[in-house]
Image (cartoon, rainbow, N blue to C red; front, side, top):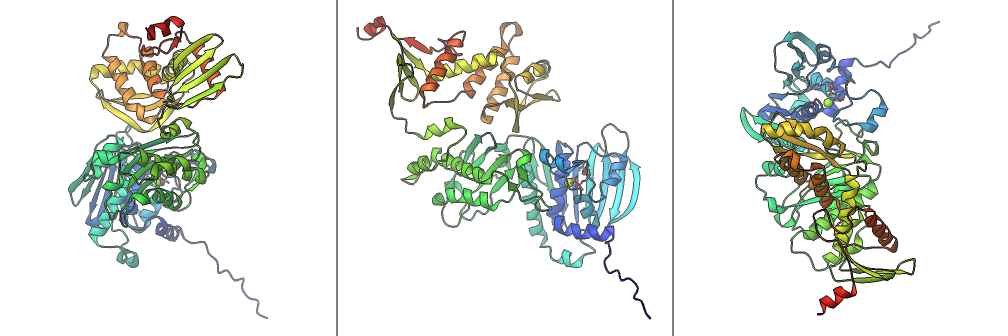
Length: 558
Ligand code: ADP
Ligand code: MG
């Protein structure tokens, strides 16, 4: 009797084979290598990142950063699959702030190419050199090298002839490489990027603002053709630029949507943006925009594809509607030749925005008059031109400038130390300073932080503003940093800088007219204003309110 030997046909694949399969998902071409290496450099908090390529990256790719480097142990571990310093448990994905987290990029690259690594932590005198080729570690030794990390990748796909053959010409791969490089450089204008091809420096992008980052990549665009957009709501914020439809090249195919500083392909959002633009565009053109969405990490899942270029959003519907309204509004407010019925369409199709105030800018600025008796029949009000309030309280009649009133209320709230939480700037603002200013700013840093303003002084010649007080529009950041720098030039004894900043901030933070008011709103305003120490004067010294006395009227008609 023959008993069959137990048959085992299923086997766990050897690590090297697993890595090659995984590489097929992450590393498709030289551009994927560049993406992964540059993203790692950013995660390592590098300030300067340089990319060198030869023959479209097919021959050689080098990425050098001045980031935190790796210890000798990590320098070997980083090539292991699922080895990452960025998350420890799945819960960490809810608060993910790094580009990477899957720990498979380096393993994948090393599975399909020859990789050399030079890395040194700034605190150590000696670095580590590792050479690994097609999954096999060949060399590990201490080495002298600059602080930071350099990866050199050669012989990409040399053992995978089919893969190698499917690559395009050097020029085409080069174009893909640049594309990938730009997609990382746009959302990080605060860092310095360089790109070399065949030893020629093609792009040198020093730290700057988003606007200048865009203009230094697209040297063919003009600043006045870029329409800024910005919106903050409680569940997401968006900022960026739209290229005016008139300046959009007729065959444009590019658009740049970033979510939490990651380039994302999101068909539904892109389609939504396109549908708003469409009536303005000629022929086949697609809109060109750079839009940066920020959502809490807990509301987005980017673990959809290994390359993390797709995302699921928790509030997709809301975000889509808001995105459309933001673009509509931006296009409507820009000085463009608009289709006849456009404004009409804009105001009727806007969804309710959490940030109500901006909405009202679309209302016609006609002298509208509203009169509503207040709950206690002893008062009554009229709203004039969306800005001035004629208020009767008992026998008194007041004329109030609402803008000044709101500024005063905010200003005093601020001065009285209402808790001010910082709100991170997606694009920190940089400004040059003198060493003397640097010293003063260092002294001020802590008190500024208490006011929601986080500054960083870099090498005595540059100051960076990382946060603005919560609620403040991002666009105010540059002006506020200017004001902070200006304050360092004045004699300390003579200024109350806290008050000066409060003044400045009240000017930006305030909701702008035209206003719409409910009777509760009027009550609240009147109450808040009377709580102020100086209810009659705006922070910058303009009058806020007049009691209309008979004498005043007589004077008027004298
Ligand atoms: P992930 O980025 O998902 O963590 P990677 O395979 O890309 O996975 O990298 C593995 C690990 O190697 C990272 O978590 C990080 O600790 C380290 N590493 C990679 N590149 C760098 C770098 N340029 N500087 C410092 N550490 C790095
Ligand atoms: Mg990575």
